[in-house]
Image 1: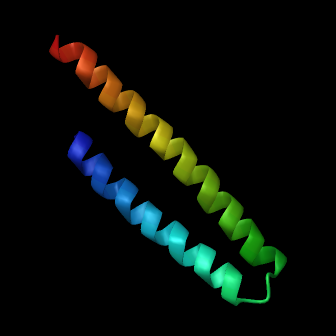
Image 2: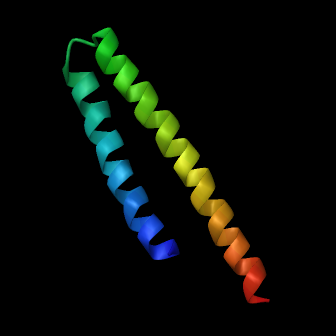
Length: 62
């Protein structure tokens, strides 16, 4: 399960990076900034969730 989550996170990093590049190359419209903000929040939440899951798995192994 943790491996699936890791693959999902990697895809989200790529999507975030793509949105970031598009925002930098584009005309910085409010919609682009909103997309970047939403992608950033989703990414941060999922990274935190991933580390909590991995920490819980570490506790369960002992």
